[in-house]
Image (cartoon, rainbow, N blue to C red; front, side):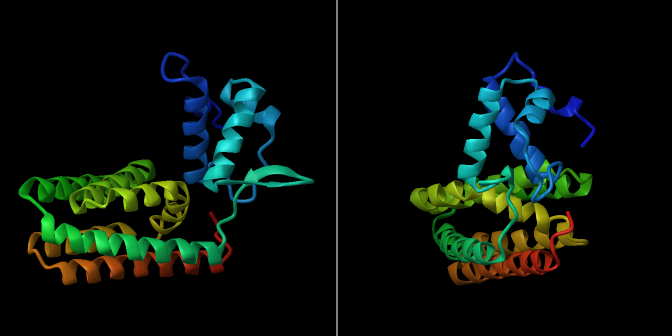
Amino acid sequence: MNDDHGLRIDRSAKTLRELALEKMRDGILNFHFRPGERLVERTLCERLGVSRTVVREVLRHLEAEGLVESASQQGPAVARPDPTKASQIYEIRALLEAEAARACADKAMPADIERLRKAIDRNEQAFASGNARDVLKGTTDFYEALFSCAGKDVAWDVVKSLNARINHLRSITISTPGRGAAAIAEMRRILAAIEAGDGDAAYDASMDHVQVVANLAQTALAGGNKH
């Protein structure tokens, strides 16, 4: 937590609030800020180089996303992923993603297949480089392409509303030894079924993928999440 330089805000782009929000969200997802760690407004003002008003707005936004929680006596802190809520998030993911994969298999055009393949390739490179932020972005890009191909815009809106919580859990699972190769293999299995036009296989591959990460997350959370 001594690398304050990386948290300083570049005032030449976006708004200070947007930049501070991105920095704080990335800091939480990359475990720069640890689960349960108190978030002191004055300290964050100094580290981010922004006003207390901006910090308060950012913390309220992160609380709405489920990344920050507030205790009446201690103030805001980084949320600790809850196993019960995590299980529910994975249930929602499984249902929505599997149905999207099935629909995509029925509707996919060559351009859709190529978009999905490129997203997986970028994700494979991100895993190889060890860049967690790029892995999270690449994974989100893959699912955005999947839901777009499926024509499931409303379902994607639901997933996006949970994206911060999903990525918080994903940050835990992607650090599991060997997870990179396994995750890419699982995504390529989904893509192969879609390319073959086999909706049932795409559904099953997607369900299996979510079940794997759900189990990894629950194991990590049961172990107290040492990140």
